[in-house]
Image (cartoon, rainbow over all chains, first blue to last red; front, side, top):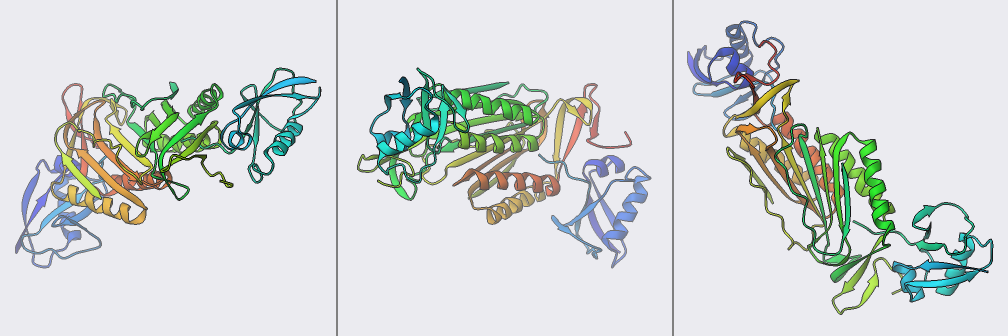
Length: 81
Length: 81
Length: 138
Length: 138
């Protein structure tokens, strides 16, 4: 197992009720699996909310394998400006 | 004959060497005739300079008959901003 | 609301305002005198206006703009007389609910101003010579 | 030159400048908090950022903008934390030789910012409730 730090903002924070959580995941687990895990935890409260992914402060595209110690953010639609 | 006041700006002022001149013109004379008269006076110095026309502080289009006491401006390309 | 002014002294910008409830976009344009006019180094510019018509035409364009685009306010000051290099000759402020209509309105307004308002530039060259900008036979 | 800042206090605008020789266009945008967020009356907004990435992404977009459009400078301040209705949350200044490239650049910059910079709004309602803006299941 590896550990990743999930940081939560906006609707993800609201749905999970936390700003940060350490998750234990299988070696080789991917961003898609992490997103499924988070949507499960949110229990419907993230339905219809598109999520982009950032690993270690950079956007990533597609399904990316996570590594031990990664900082991951599932980014709901941004609202700056 | 009638009298019109020709006010001159920018290249027209520079070409005629005056900011304002009273012109005596025939009754029924038009803006086109006035423009020809001014271009003659300018002696080539307004060649290639497009001129719009304003009568009494309003743009006019086409060939317009002038009246006694009109304030006329032959407007070279404007350069505000 | 529309305010337009033609003034012969340095432009004092319209004040900013933190008290508006509905306008999410404040857009400000300052048009400034560049050191070159048609490729020639200048000392300063002199803006000449057709007094009366310059302001009435400016106002007409401002009202047109406010009728075409859903903006709340358009404020404009245009300077005439001598303007030093670097200084503002045209100051425009547009308040609107959203930025897109403000950007479109300011684009239209300045573009029409540059076509229609009877104001002209005279270049004052380094040696003091004064010629109409873009005059070809100097 | 590109300057971007994310700050948690009222925005002090970038100073104006009458000393530039080549930039004929100074364009300023202030994005302000409106009293309604998704149709609901709010007391204020709270901007939440992903610290670090928000600023680096903002900087990346600013540099992209300056590479695409022939502008001289892009300065930007984005506020985070609590912002009262009427106050500026986003302040952008673009200096360029001519206004058209400035207008295009500011349009592109803000549009990309709104797509990519990880900053979010929380609506603080009149009764003190705090919810993510556009949250559907409140």
